Each structure stands twice: as structure tokens, then as C-alpha cells.
Image: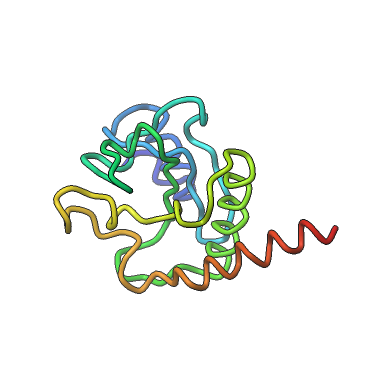
Length: 141
């Protein structure tokens, strides 16, 4: 990887921007919970590869890709869960979908098992709770 003196988030951002990888995501969330937008939402990102969800193939065409920085097997940080919840709530509000559309690459990849993220230890119930709480707080303001 180039630019080794830069923080990981900046190196990944630069790598995506230079198109040196054949993958992309709309958003990247750092370990500290910072959200970087890498691909404008009006464009397709290449995060899912061969995939299907709710009977619809090619998830890249209709889903937003969110990547979280971390090593395989490393738990997500509380900051990442909070950032994911806020981002997902904003996307749900902006595009009018419900929480059932929030899923992981491991759940949409074809063939099953091709992708492992976010991993079996990802706390989906916790994320949904944070989304609900963020939505309730927004309504109460």
C-alpha cells in the first residue's frame, strides 16, 4: 500500500480514488467513527460483487456500500456502531427504506461464503437498537 506515513483512513481513501483496486464503497467508517464518503450516492459502487438480496440480483446496482476499518475477527468499536447507526438512519430517511434492508456482504454474496464481512460476531441487534434510539432522539428534537 502506498502513502504509509498517512493514517489508514487516508491511505484507503487515496487508494479508492486512484482506482488501483477493483472495488469501492460509498462510505468508509474509521475505528473512531469518522464517516468518509468515497463514492457519490448517485453512482454505483463496487462492493458486493456477484450477489442477491430479497430476490434481486446484482446488489451493487441498488444498495449503498459501507465499509468499516478493522481486521478480520477484530470487534467493531462503539464509535463504529454509532456511526453506522447514524448513517443508516440518514439513508433510511433519505431513500425511504426500512431496517430490513440493512445487511452484510456475507448475507448477499454469491456463492454463500464468498464474503465473510461483517462477520458472525457483528451485533446486528445492537445496531438496530442504536438506529431506533437515534430515530427517536431525532423525532423528539
